[in-house]
Image (tube, rainbow, N blue to C red):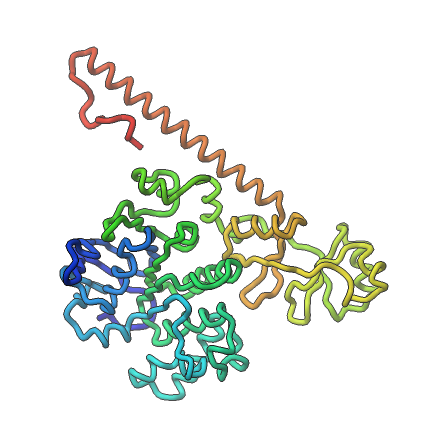
Length: 419
């Protein structure tokens, strides 16, 4: 097993198989897959297709019946499975935290088992809480029952990362939280991966989630047979067959909004005021700001309220009664789809963009998002025209060869399926 710490390790599955006694068919049948070091690979497929079984065989929570597993080039199929699990992070749905342990004790579980000194464990616990966006002083001594679902999942990810493993396995980790929290947790995972460069294998049944977080996606059929293993963009634009097309579903062009991040488009500045600013200063900002509205920030610099001209007058100069609360924000790692949903939900044509601690960094507006959608649709149209042109050239070449008596063009085959 490669040393823990630093970047991820490659994973190779070779003819991996799982048969359960009494079953006519294997649960997982002869799966081979190569995952690059530092890559996020998502296994997606219908319920019962064997994706979770495949994942659990990687750290041997389920023992393979046949085949090999290599990490960092080393065969781990026959080594001590308990030792292997301590070197592979594992995060599951509903976090799986021990209810009788505090947050800090849950995170420290594996480092304590492998004999880290107390000072190192304490420092690592605080580092990880900060990394997943939870204040160490506030959450260190809490119990799982005192946390929201999203906070529990953050602690679950921190626990999986505690011993700094090169590989992180995630089995539908965000499946039990509400959609808004789920979006934020996905963004947090993307941000963490930018910093940590782990090898992540992620199981989900949600294709939109797979598009959002995966460097590559393995679409699995029954018994984990691989229908297509490719980048999200390749699967969206060129699904291998009808089974994969069914997973992509309608609106492939709009699903491509999940491939573009907020950081990839123009983030504009916006007039802001602080909650402790004098009222006259806020009035002046509204009057000379060149806009009908300012964004009120709280004492930590986080978006709090949108203030329009007249709000303060109607509320008789009281910030407590003035303006409209900011209901949703997006991070730079959010997708354009997240941003578009936030803009449409807020119904005001813009959404505030925040940093890792929720601090204001800018605004994305509807015009920017619509321009991005237009560019994607135009790109799809041009790709379709180019594909049609290639088919016409192939058909013309085949017709010419037949007329010359050549008997067809070698390798063209069924043109209707060429993509």
